[in-house]
Length: 489
Image 1 (cartoon, rainbow, N blue to C red):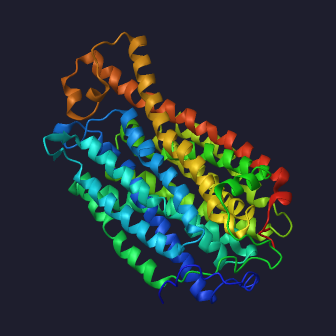
Image 2 (spheres, rainbow, N blue to C red):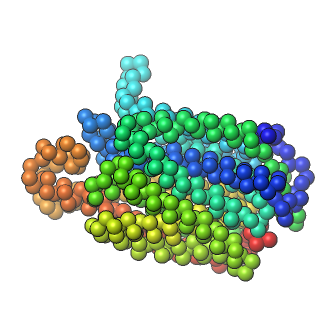
């Protein structure tokens, strides 16, 4: 079965408001395929953080010798800035063009750009030489441009395949891609990078995405827009960003959700991108061991928590429609003390326990953000509504979260140097073989201050989850009034 031609909407709104589009097995296949795409999205997005300990090594040891601040820029803003702006354009196009074709093209682009990250060596163009860091940054920008075409059309397609009463569960299942993709990046990328080098990891995990792009294009059918909406939902011929913003300005539920989920992603992306580096510094684990022993169980627990939160909200939605907001809101608040434990203890088992439980209870907000973004908007504005959410969330959350941790870590390290009276020390000298060249006082200082500065910056970031939870709970106040399509219908 191939993707259908663009603009096959016709006048079929409401036909599938009880059953959804297509047969149940095919609908399940589409959801699984789109979840696989989202998994691939986060494999390629998260791989840089997995191989972080190797990239941060000195150049003579195969790394790039970069600071925490620059690593935060590469993992965050370097990806997020164009990702967010291109995402607005893609979402606008997705309201009228074939969404399946858009996703297929996007998958191919980001997969190829991920593979090209493995070419991060000094590049000679004419008489100019571009440094390896710049090559990596340009490739990360390319990954961001490609990935901008994933979520807005995917969630819009899911909303047309599934009736309103099933969307929170379906979108919760789709949202597992965030955590499962991170698991796979660690499970495969960690060992490959440890044994064959971090550059090879980008080739191994990037190139298969081209085959996935072909699979999506050939096997997923474009559904009619609004097919699974209730018949009484008001139609719109064409929505603009201005029209959608005017509509959303009357929906406080949307903006409370955006504020809460943006702060949650600020903390989440920051912690996720520095987690391997933190484990390496604080507990001495290799890239492979940090990936498999810590990151894999943490993100598996997070995946289970994501689906469980969406499932629980769907089960009780007929009695408590606002559960899709308050269940993840409470989860975010509960996660804060576990991150406090993880980033204050020097006991590895306690830190691992804190990271696992914190991840398990916090990620329900992923199902909430997509359900609310889809539910407050009429059918022609759904991809735009989601893109506005992702624009704010990724520009602030993804763009600044890792950069905040990296910058704060370097700042705290310098403060500790000044307090201890240490001079003539460059922080990258605390990494790898360069540490052997330091004097005794500098070595002792590095042993304590180098991991502690990062640990404290991650602690500050982790406690912000409580703020995110409170903001998401605020969305409950106007929830029933603001939802155009109630997921209990």
